[in-house]
Image (cartoon, rainbow, N blue to C red; front, side):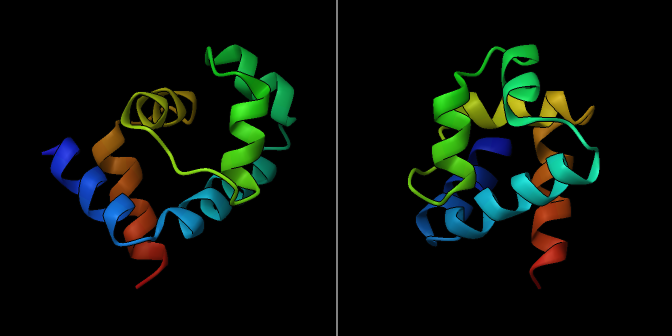
Length: 85
């Protein structure tokens, strides 16, 4: 299910909005990009490119990001979709 939802989001070119959603969510927690990335085994440069809309999100990275926010990928993507309805 998560892979279908992730595929639908990424193939619909919503990944640019997803990057902004990740940025806003991380900033609301007042966590630096480097701290969030390193705590979740993500290269800071990769997270920066995602948040700055220069790169899409791979499923593996999406799983790490969702875990970093204390949720599942499915719940994270549902929250994202509900934000941009």
